Amino acid sequence: MSARVYRLLPAIIAGGALGFAVLWVAVIAQPPPIEGSPGWRSTTFGSAIDDPTSFLYTLLDAVTFAGLLFIVASGFTLIFGLMRVVNMAHGTFFLLGGYIAYELQQKMTGQGFAIPGEEVNTWEWVAPVLLAAACIAGIGLLVQQSLLRWNQGQDLRQALITIAISVIAADQVIAHFEGGNAVSVTWPGKVNRLVDLRILDVQYSLARLTVLALGVAVGVALYLWLYRTKTGVVIRAGVDDEQMTSALGINIQRAFAIAFVVGSALAAFGGVVGASQGAVASGQDGQWLLNSLVVVIIGGLGSLLGAAAGSLLYGLVFSFSATYLPTTGENCCTQYSIVFTFILLALVLSFRPRGLFGRPG
Image 1 (cartoon, rainbow, N blue to C red):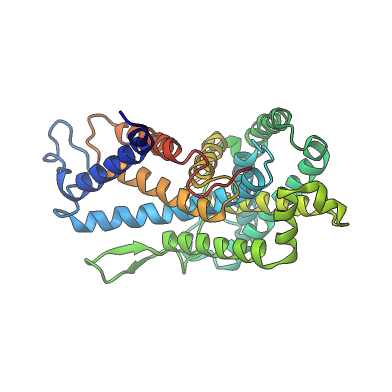
Image 2 (spheres, rainbow, N blue to C red; image 1 turned 45 degrees about the vertical axis):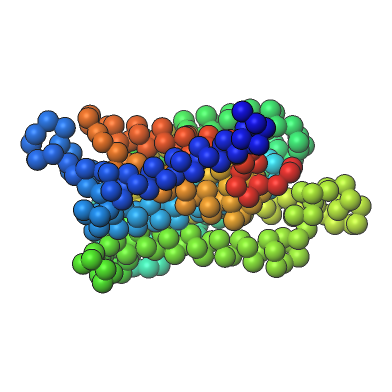
């Protein structure tokens, strides 16, 4: 086999996998058996041609899930992808943000465990978001200044320190936040409803569309901050050449601290949005750290556009594999989703070792 074929082999494999996936979803996927028969599951659907409504629901689920992924992963992109700080506590910041917002909303509304959406106004959702993000931003600043600043560039030490923080925080969550049980933040009543999309008679959750809008807003705000402000220019210059930037009289450590604070606040913001859309519970910190890591690796270290692309690919693969792959057991769709997520990661890295939009470190 020639050298050129070897170079093209990963792209050929990736293209073939993508083509087969599209063909499967569009034509091959079979509808579930008759209800009550062996192997029946109500969560699997026929092909997109046979059941376009279910295809549209799945596509919307994938894109809105990608919005949540991007909110969380964008903070990890700032801290790990751009600054190369190994923050294994990012998932912990996500979890704490969700729990803090839950406790604040409970106190503001004076309601019990499950708060009806119609009894929550916009401020009773926005205020917990802002306060939770501020609390986690403060914790992030404390961690960065006291534990991580002095070992910049020492990846193993940073990883061990932040893993220790995660373990300690996990115990504190169980001790102080509902025993670590699953809790949810309630969307405002104006958001917690269905809207008619006027396509195939689909009525879709406005809350999930709000998640997508929030993800887009975070992306636009980060782009403007990193590429249109002096602070953003300083952060990117400091990452490329810290010594030269410092020699120009710029306080690069302050810029790095700001970036870490913003990344931590985004993790908390993602935790509140995730708790609003579903729930947060003890143990989810590891899952969301892994989600962020996969997104950043697929998209490429230090690339905001890559984080968006990685989130979208992750969301599409996760949602469509869960919906359209055949199932034989109660939890097979979830297992397939995880497997195909890592297949996506392997395919991307096989022909783009730095990720889709990565650049040399």
